[in-house]
Length: 375
Ligand SMILES: Cc1ncc(COP(=O)(O)O)c(C=O)c1O
Image 1: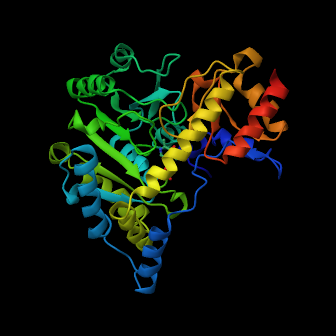
Image 2: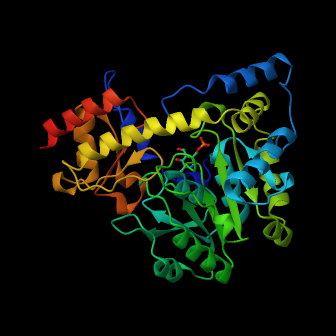
Image 3: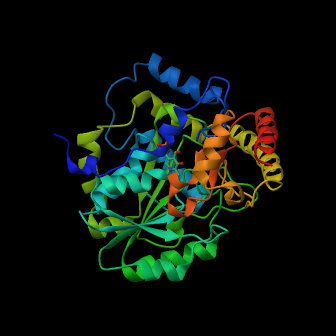
């Protein structure tokens, strides 16, 4: 009964792990901010509801939002992207899906950093493409030569994710430029997932779209504004790229038939997120940084670990104590929820992903338990 595209795709490992959780577990597994959505954003959505903004809106999103996103891209990323080249989606997740489903034919190849976010592989498999892992080194850096060597005549795109889930690394301007040059030379598309753009500690975020026309930029509201349940994200397609291939027109077929539009009143909240006071973002990021410092200094006494530069994950090598699955299982049995690194690719097999989007005191307690259990 079931289509091969589903049968050929595995469920995320993360679900299985969470089923092992007990009520008093400390949750270092979850990939979402533990803060409430800022009040001004909630109020804007409530006003929209009261004003009856509960009907279908244009497929690409309300004009107020796509215009605000266009202004944001100019201000933050120095990009001139017309409002017409932006699509509001049901989270960055839908934007990733639209990108891959629009570009990838059966059997075509998608380059994905390994370790990398779980959806890249899952979505590639669902559109019957082939995921080609790009090995990151032990400092989670991407090697330009191995990107070049992985490109075949079947390669359609490369997915970049900076700051990264699960590694917490941030790509340098030179790394991004190098990959974008390869994309131009080989005419492949860079799908740049920038959902953690704002969650960055003392480094500068660069968008791949600054360095290549062959780019689909993906971002959203889930992480920066703690709006995971609102399901609003977006994508922007470079104008030259779109003129050449009519990417948006074709993407719209999937968005229109599959989703129609992102939730109307949530989009009004998203407008307020972009246009309102940005202190909520800096306050959240400084709290994440305080937690990053705590978890990093605790973990470096236990594991071999890189200091995260962005996002809210830390990805230590745990091989001193067993593989990632063994160590994660042991920790979960001791009430610390975490995710075995194998969920993020072969190169994650000796690692465990911990999220520090949880209370400072809980991180402290978790570090104590880890020391007792492992040392
Ligand atoms: C790297 C990355 N991209 C995309 C997403 C999806 O975000 P959204 O909630 O906007 O669908 C996530 C969520 O965890 C993520 O970690």
